[in-house]
Length: 74
Image (cartoon, rainbow, N blue to C red; front, side, top):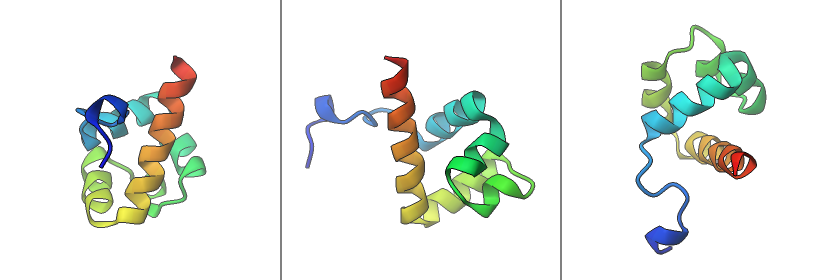
């Protein structure tokens, strides 16, 4: 297990992470980067959170994109 200091996701909720990605890329840009139907068809934070909590592979892709975004902002 990684120590919290080295984990860029430590303390970041999935809702915060998703909201920041939507604010930065918008739903169309997010759907282009992560090919998930809930980002394309009538997207909402609530429906996306439900899907991401149940689907580990999709959550990993979204978390990876968030980490890339954070690194590019640094």
